[in-house]
Structure formats: structure tokens, C-alpha cells
Image (cartoon, rainbow, N blue to C red; front, side, top):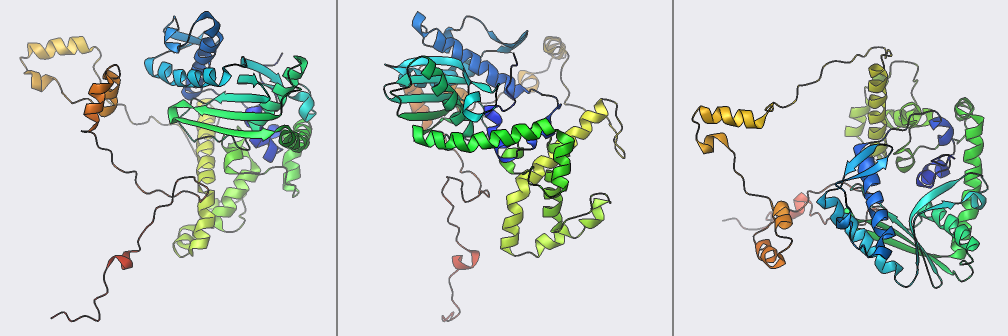
Length: 424
């Protein structure tokens, strides 16, 4: 049995909005990262704790090992910070599940819902309580805040969970579905409640999208590329859809989008691009703010594409493949460090250096102080009066961002008009 579904719920926003992406990604290597491994470890720790609650376990701190297995023989350390953040999530789930039925790391099959066989996912926590079905998801990263509202992944899990509890004769009383996304490292919980009728409307919409994505996948990458070249909208680049796409570095739609945005016109990608983009900087400098706004909307996606292209070139060169015009070179050396600090310390002492010459002493930061004093909150509360924190610097964000807009006083308005006053 496959470990991953083709139409995965976590990638639903991508294949639902860019139906040719599955075909483009086919055959590309799945690469993990330290962040992904850390997230997997946090999920495993949370699942262990929730599954052991009937045995009286209430805290991840009770996990009996210093490392946790996250796949095969791969181990990841379980540290104090991870236990604290997972504790927040575990407490929230236990509170939500009080008086109901809790299913942890439950496989849910949404194949029948979207009309494509073999499609499934794993829901972190499913709660059935009264007339409400709850789908809860732990996201351990510290990147963007993820909203539950209109979240495709969560709604696909809800469809699979409904199918599951129907087999358990628990679905008849369900009238509403509560979707919850927990991001303890961002101190955030996002919730969204929908009716079964709303979920059914989503199912109808995504069943059509799923069939399109599956059919294009079956047709293959070459066919999808030909369709795009012929004017089809089979590939639809966007910041969200392209963020984790494995075909980003060679997708013709994304390449065309980037080049057309930068150049203000479609360019001939078969020719040297640099001369065609030579006037781009001047155009931006002389553009009106509406034009700047239109370009700014594409900046993140363009930067993401550039990063993907660099990574692809490095990967090919590391494999020994030729990338015309480029080569691998030795990068800048890292910082110097002692081979063995104890040996270095012994030798420095033999040179009769003073302590202030041998050691650097620095007061601990407020963050470290909070950890040291966490068991004595009264002492920590006293110390907080001595802590300051600078305001964040102004940064550009889309109007959809939920933070309040800064009120900026134009420079000219900051000065008093004294042109009509007597200066004598």
C-alpha cells in the first residue's frame, strides 16, 4: 500500500488550482529537510501522549526517551522546547475532546468523496462530540500562520472522517464540522465551523478539480506542456500553488509568468534574456504606483522561482551533470573553531593568560532568563519590568494581511507652514 496519496490533502490547494502540477511533478525526488523532520518528530510525540492518556499520561515530558523515531532508523531529539510546545497542543486537544470520542493520527479515505480511488490522508485528531465533528491539525513550523477558513486540506480530511464515522454509525447526528489548526510555536489556533451542506458544496467543487488533476497526470508531463504551449490554462502559477511544487524550476508557465512580469512584455526565451530585460530597472524607477503594485504582487513568486532554479542547477552539478556556462567552486571557508576546547583551554592556561583574556562573559538574554526562572514565576514577573522590546520595522504587506495598517504622516505634513508668518 502506498504511503502517500497522489491527490494528497496537504497539496490540495496546488492540484486544485493548477491541475497540471501533478503531471509536472511526476518522477521528481521527494526531499526532506531538518524542518520537516522536526515537524514529524513533534507529531509523533503528540500522538504518543494523546494515545497514552488512558494510561494516565498527560504530558510529553513523560516520554521515556531522549530521541523519537520518525521513519526507518532515523531518530530526532526530543528537547525541552519541543515538549513545551507539544504540551500546549495536547492540552488543547484533551480539552476539546472532553466528553467525546477522540481518534489520533487516524487514516481517512476521501476517495469516494472526490471520485478518484486510492486517495487518503492522516488526520492528527478527530473528535466526535454531540452533533459536532471536529478535525484538528498540528502545524509545528514557525513560518506563515495557516487559517482554517476555506482550508482545502482540512475539508478533505473532514470528508474522509465523515465516511469513517458513517461506518461506525456515528455520522447521523452530525450537523456541523469544526476545523481547527494549532500552531503552538506561533501561539495561534485558527477555527472555522461549517455545516454539512457547506462541506457538500466543497466536495462537489473539488471532485471536479480532482478528476481534472488525475486526468492530466494520466496524460503525462509532455502532453501537459504541449497543452500549455497551445494556450490551455492547465498550468496556473501562483504564490501559494507554486510554493512547494517540485516542478517549480522547470515549469513553463511559471517561467513565462516571471519573464513577462519582469520585462513588461513576453520575451523570447530561446534568446539571451539579459538584453531583453536591460530596461526593466529603469521602467520600475519611472513607473506609477499602480504599476509598482502590480509588480510587487509577483515579487515573492519570482524570488521563489529564482531560488528553485539555483537549487536545480546546484543539484545537477553535484550529480556531475553539465550546466552550460556554470560550474561548482569552493565557497567561503567557515568560522574557525577549536578541535578540542579542553585542550585549547589547557594550553591557554599554560600561557598564564588572565580569565578576562581567556573567557567572554555575557549576561543571559530575557529569553534564556525566562527558561531559567520558569519554575519561579514571581521572580520572572519582577524581572519583566527590566525588559524592553523594540517595535518591528515597517514592512510591506498585502491589504489582505490581518495586521493593522500603519498610519504614516507624509513628510510635508510634519512641518508647519510659516510662509505667511512674520519671522521678525
